[in-house]
Image (cartoon, rainbow, N blue to C red):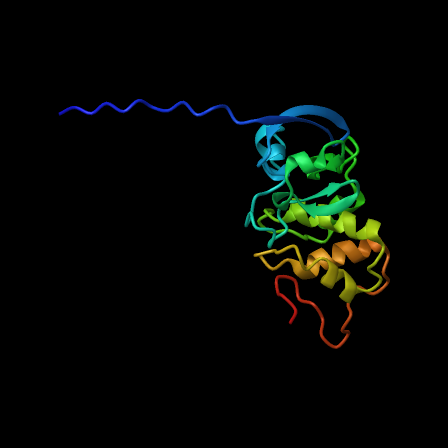
Length: 184
């Protein structure tokens, strides 16, 4: 006996119109309610600098700036950001002139594989805007939501504190940071 099953045609998912200003350009998009800001940026806006690491808000690879504040874009729905200003790593430079933190990352060799670098940069810019970090230890603590599997933490901290103008990049003079190691 042949059994024929008709494929059920699911109704189209409801979409919502949202307006975002991404890296200085206005975007009007229609998104389903479940689309994260990360997926919108990568898959619909073509801005692949923002990385999908853990997709659970634990690694910081997806950090972007929303209204000048750093957020994990994998943990927020795109519809929640309607009307907001979004800055990704692609929007940090001013034309061909790098943002001072981008240049500091180069000067301090603050990246190895580079996967975490976009999130580290956006997080560091947010950190500077927050104005809460005044010491190397505070920079390290307030950047702790951004994981670097290569262990470039000493160089990342040196880049950030260099831009901050902290005279001494070491918070433990008797325990110098050695590039490529993670201080305990």
